[in-house]
Image (cartoon, rainbow, N blue to C red; front, side):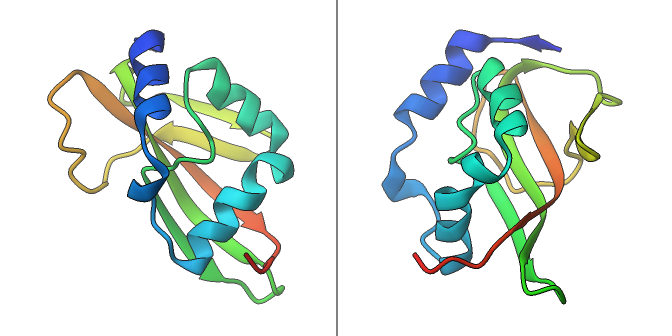
Length: 123
């Protein structure tokens, strides 16, 4: 990966909380993700990404009583090979191939994290 670290950090620093989704699933994600997945948080932090400010999530209630976020996406400025994959504790981080329009004209890509599970905590 060739990451524009300063630009990525600036993006997440300037991304206002009011722009984040305020559904209960997303509020649960913002509140619990950092504590539940500290190694993924550290990985993302090292590339300038704030784990509590995803670009997109896709939550579903799972049969085990948890919320499964089967896809969580983050914007990163710079370039990355299309076949990029990184594994942390059996969780895959890769280049997203499908995502909403980012409305960003600068060089960037979207990282996608698979199958994160969180307890349902009231927000």
